[in-house]
Picture (cartoon, helix red, strand yellow):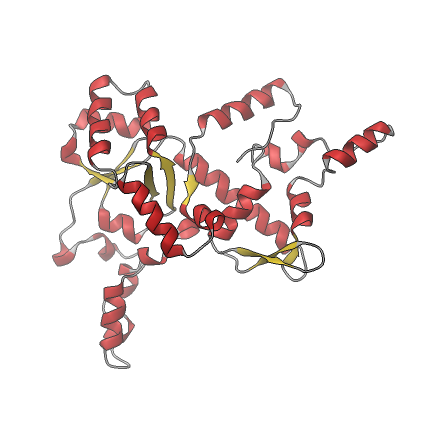
Length: 307
């Protein structure tokens, strides 16, 4: 995910190393699909199988989508947390072991003090409801199934042309994630009981970093007239226009200045050395761009859409 740390000032190096060390091993679901390739169904089936075996844990963030983390790494974060007492750790780890696919935890699972401690430690987000959560999962990592359902599509297809039912019925916009307060109510106008949603420390920092990096990559690609360019050129721009190692060594041997220092580039100043290949896979996973063979200059990258 991150490249080797180049030479830089002690304060900047300490900040970079601490950021790397404090970020758990997250990966977005779209990234997994982009790296593994194949059909989305087979990849999702394999992920679901690993979830059921307790190998992976799926985490969802309100309005941002989902990421995956190894279950043993997640449990290690819980055990090493200094903000939780042993009783709270034991209760939470027991819940995780008994519910490998769970994304939410009922408020009745623990007492108020334990729930507050887990929220403050970053392992739970509190006060949300299942319906409100699902209605808000859009944006950068949103999934189509979070905005509608097969039932609503089937109902609309059976309705008469020109009727309200043909466009999803009353409240269709709100049910698909609109801003009306009606989307916060369950059937019959009764609000569901609040639930905790499982999270992890550093989850928000990861999503903020990756989404900003993808936006920067897309802005670099947009500078091309047709929204596409060779992959090697896009990589060079992501790295800040720094020459390759071989070229830099040759210039140094001749006593020439090699250009901008690595730690002065945006890649290191803002993205802490995030590798080009990682960001490219993230952008592919969200459907923002595609990679294709040019037939002359290797692989090319083409922009598909802007969010």
